[in-house]
Length: 316
Image (cartoon, rainbow, N blue to C red; front, side, top):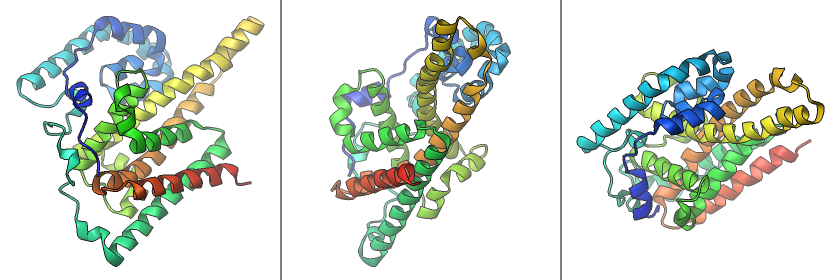
């Protein structure tokens, strides 16, 4: 069963940080074409749209130069209103207030009888099928496309779910701390929202996107995984930028690298793959993290997921 949220993590999660205009402009200047400034201002959907369009072919990016002050003011106003009303901060607006203790108890949706006897065995087999199918598909797609970002994201997800307690002291470390805090947001979400049956989890990417415009919980779930996907997109885009653009430009003194469309393919593949595979894997593993006192099932299913990914990657 998941442990109580460490006080220092809970304090970080439930603080009401105000956005800074200077930081927003820095993100706009250096990573604005990838939507980083909008993600910083909790505008995940429009940030993803900028990722997919290279800043709206730079036009949207230029327009945002004048919109940033208003976006910062709006975000800080909403945050202040939520603080005054005693509501969770914007980043956790899909949850009730928390003292960190609820994760130490089973979720309300959990029925212990569903994990006992023959019924429990059927559930375990169904969950194993979901993880093996998602892992195998992930490895196969990554091998065929050469896109390994989703593999890295799933690997990070599995590690943080298994070792979140050990990683908690690193919550102030850049990147690692962000991933730890994200994992606790995911735990809080699934503690209050039932992950669903095995079939619905297997098709969660399609169902999630379909229901997102109509259901707040679906939008919150999609947003959580897109937040993870956006982080890996930016990370690998920076690597691609160095290898595909900067290095050839330095070596050949040519602007040819800037005219390619490599970034469109990478962004689309990365976002689709990360969301498609982290959603069913994350929801399934979370059941065992939140409901089992022993970590044996979680570890075994995590290893099964990793093995399935490797089979997909190494298959001819």
